Length: 175
Image (cartoon, rainbow, N blue to C red; front, side, top):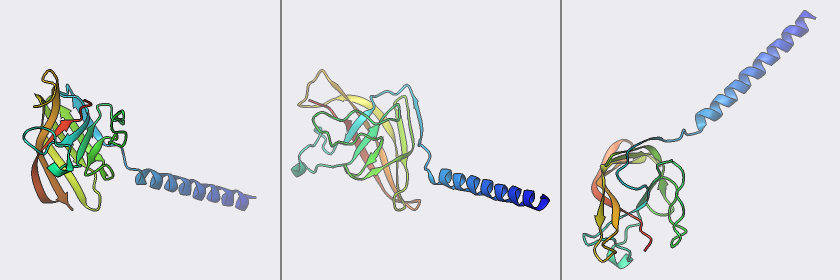
């Protein structure tokens, strides 16, 4: 009887260790939510597109349209889809195109200062440090001040700086 009880206890112990080990590996394989900090943001969150010309927002491919975008959500949830562009990005992150999204690893918007770092895809990450503000866009309603975010975008591959770019994102405006 004693032998049988020890065998049952041993089997239970092994099963418990297996369950604990399995649970730990599942938890380890799940990426944690990104770290975010928002304190008195000076600008709206939402969808921002890259601004490519000094005269305003470029929306024609003949004018060097740039697909890159940024989605910032102060509740870290998807934003509402744009009624005039239902395929536009809605999940927080940095987008190289509508199809290629780099999730945030960390994002901070404190006053007018904006910082983000993305998770790695194939060893590539992006880091941004800049400011936010509002501006009147030429040839648009002069009574509407449109939010923007501008600063330095750094592309890294395996931790090595590959490029730095001055960049400006303008808030997607439904006209």
